[in-house]
Amino acid sequence: MTYRAPVAEMAFTLRHVAGLDRAIAEGLHGDLSDELVDTILEEAGRFANDVVAPLNTIGDRHGTPLKDGVVTMPPGYREAYRAWTEGGWNALPGPVEYGGQGLPVLLNAACIEMWNSAAMAFGLGPLLTAGGVEALSRHGSEELRARYLEKLVSGEWTATMNLTEPQAGSDLSVMRTRAEPAGDGSYRISGEKIYITWGEHDLTDNIVHLVLARLPDAPPGTRGISLFLVPKVLPDGTRNALKCAGIEHKLGIHGSPTCTMVYDGATGWLVGEPNRGLACMFTMMNNARLGVGLQGVAIAERAYQQALSYARDRRQGRASAASEGASPIIEHPDVQRMLLTMKALTGASRGICYLTAEAIDRAHRAPDEAGRKAAQGCASLLTPVAKAFSTDIGIEVASLGIQVHGGMGFVEETGAAQHLRDARIAAIYEGTNGIQAIDLVTRKLPLEDGAVVRGQIGAMRLVVERVLKEGGPAFGHTAPRLRETVESLDRATSYLLKALGSNRPEEALAGATPYLRLFGLAQGGVCLAQGALAANAAVKGGDTDPAHPARIALARFFAENLATAARGLEETVTGGGGFLQDGVLALAG
Ligand SMILES: Cc1cc2nc3c(=O)[nH]c(=O)nc-3n(C[C@H](O)[C@H](O)[C@H](O)COP(=O)(O)OP(=O)(O)OC[C@H]3O[C@@H](n4cnc5c(N)ncnc54)[C@H](O)[C@@H]3O)c2cc1C
Image (cartoon, rainbow, N blue to C red; front, top):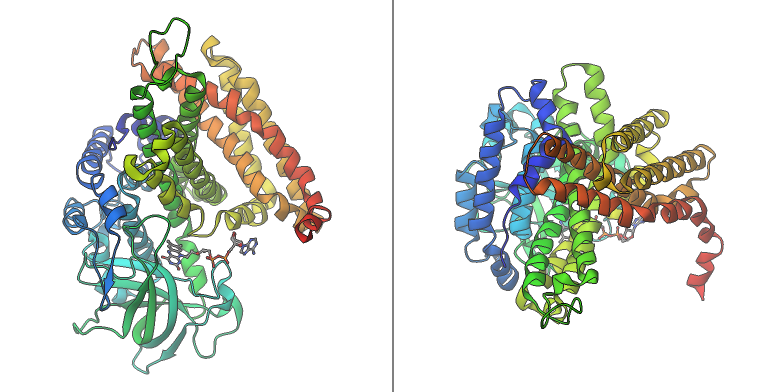
């Protein structure tokens, strides 16, 4: 079973959960119309279904062999990438002055989901190029922007992000790559970077590497790191002194080359201020982390579609005494529970990611300073949740997808196993999920003395109150369960803020991962409830689309069956730090 982009569901989430309708009505996106949004989503869906999705298994089986410094991409990738860039998809969110279409991050989020559902290894490369465009647009000199941006915006060239070194992963302060001034405004870059995504490939004539390195007089630690642009092919057409020295053999995303890059006095140019490289990288982190969160949603969606289709066909056992012969497994309550869990978690994480994208747009486009500042706070708060919750969901849903298939899920034939193998990396790269949870708790909760997180919890409460008032019998116990979830989040937040304020950071660190999960459950449940309220209003208005009752039932399932984990998570956050004393003893045994 191949992939079909759920365009109607995406459009509904964009409009009624993330707030695209409101943003368009407020004039935030210029003359972007509802019709244009629909046309773009339809066209992207067609391209993802027909051109990209068939590459998924091919990429997994062929991999990206390296021979004599040349990486060969899987069959069909080159043609698909060319058609994709010629279709203007790479340029969708790019800056207008460099040939981009300047469309909302939110609309592009739905497209990113489609490319990555269709083939995550294919969708990953352009995420890195988008990061390069952002870094250069914001921090590059006029000369660098003029030389590189247009080709990166169109996708004629791709970009990479070179942070990781063997001894420097989560902790970049111990990075060693060096940059020596050459005396002519350029620098000579030397060192080894590992795990560089799309570091070498044969899809484009040039690859623009953004490399973190240290200047000779740089202070130690993260304050001494600078960012450099180091192209594979120099402006005079000669090859730069860099090469791909190896390709990783890995669990998943086989169609994405993960390269060891060696820079041997390669020519590069400084991007931004000396010693401010990490700050330059961090300005683009919200977008890049959201992109990886969307990969989690994407894999979950594809795994769900495949499991649903299998469960309708596969017959085993009799679902009831009245069944004649073997029933399709979808009729068994336990299989229904798995499929509903998959669909509800996918919808919840999609809601969180799209909401984060809307906040990123608003942080740039709101007409007033106060509106931009509030949106920036919201984007900063939600980004680690979007990244870590959604990528954890991607793994869980892909794993459930295998379970629905039984033994057929474990063998490679159906493709269900590939989803789990591909999903696994998204919880690791772009800052591990543990690092995201630490970021949420230690940097984002204290924003404006806790006012940002309190504001977000307040917004969640408003939705719960609306469900209480407007939701009819079809909503069941949605409102009370969600209210308990949001109140658990509120209490856990108070506990963590207090621990941070009382100089007990280790307690906050110990509770960070369960707290992030709790946040995701509350925000995800609220997103689904908001969609259910819009669906309810549509039904009351006479709309007979069967998707509307399904949305209400899904929000109810989430609140009554999944959000109920909140209480346990709250207790883990507020009492779990105890393991710092006793539990650690268990590791010694
Ligand atoms: C397929 C793939 C593609 C990649 N693409 C790129 C790329 O394009 N560019 C690039 O620069 N890098 C890339 N990476 C590297 C990736 O970002 C790192 O692997 C990741 O940041 C984790 O670093 P590490 O592997 O050194 O793990 P470590 O930092 O050693 O972490 C190991 C474990 O310890 C935990 N941990 C570490 N420090 C702390 C702490 N302070 N507190 C709590 N827990 C901690 C982590 O959460 C993790 O669970 C890629 C990696 C892979 C596998």
